[in-house]
Image (cartoon, rainbow, N blue to C red):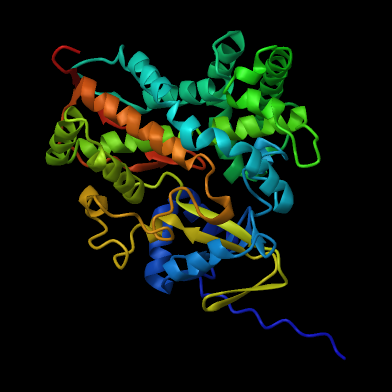
Length: 439
């Protein structure tokens, strides 16, 4: 009998301009480019990218749901992803069984009882950073939120201070910033005889690996390691189903993943929160009153709404691994990259009436749609630190509202600025603050 033929590909329409021209539009403004393509082609369109080739981009909630529910053997992380920067042992790079078993090892520290134990660490780091904030004059909060989230994730991962953590505090901001650019511009990763961005990142990685080696040596030699609750101690003691331990390279790659992913995106969302709140004084007043009364429902809703209107990550992708994959109206051949357009979903008026309006009350007493509100992605690739990030943003904002008065402003909204992977407020979330009485 003749072999069964695969059904013909059915892809959405899209622009026919040269690949380089399409890629440049996304580099200049991902969100605006996606909006223009949606307006022209509808809720799905096909584009050509430099790093991922042909991409089918989806902004239909039902089709995004199908994508996230697709088994990883049929569609999984693209060949071009953050794993190329973070290392082959990173959760971003692993697939199939390797991804599942690593995710199982990394889940416990960021959920349940252990998660709540980080609350005092978050509050302490926020108080320490904000103690030196200038009063009564404008300053960008994003450098501060970056330091807060970096110190929090370092404390959660390593559990103690020391020379190694001081070195990581200096190294990681530059390393993560450069890595974010290399992740979206793979052409500049090459080592040009020891020069260029790729070579610089490799030098950062060598320094990072040396620090992690020393910390692993210290952890394995610690007679009290069984009483520690930091992530490094847990990974050193972790065992796979066959009883084997994680290699040093695996530990280093996973720790770098947690340090990078658990740092910049949370800090950027907090900067956007400040930017949004200064332009909504009545909401700001309600949040202060709620915090003073010990509540938090409106604050939680506000952070959800900030992530809706200003998603730090604007898209998330899978690559077809099956011979053919049907998603909604489309029949996609092997190797096609399928992207859920986070920014477009968050701007869908069928999901969020009056989507251009910043209105946290839409989430008070209501849950965000699992496949319509997706700042952390979805499916088996949903961000493993989502609960940790949510707690961290809530505690930082609560502490700021308790300790400071944030001056409202009538200035125009800050533009979005691409930092490679993440999208940040162009002025860093400018704030003017005053100490509250007695603080």
